[in-house]
Length: 102
Image 1 (cartoon, rainbow, N blue to C red):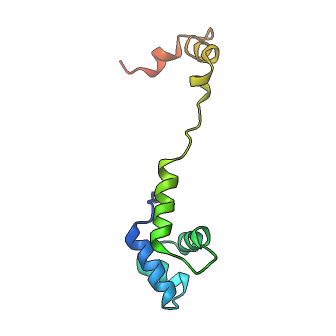
Image 2: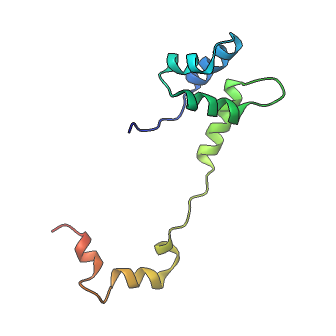
């Protein structure tokens, strides 16, 4: 499976230009080397419903969302008792020793 990479501002400009030229989403995706569902999702999520898809507005929104996400608190960070139970398990050697390479 290939790794996901965010769309660049240049790719968003190509999407905007392609739509203005009347090209299909599939043609735009092929030209960018992206999956058609990626292009469809981008257009659906960033269509302002007033005029049409705008590359700069879409890039600004993507940048904002990327930098303002809330990191989920991990259970072991939030619960000290659980953390100690896991690290100092009574069912064998401490987990810490099992995970540290010698």
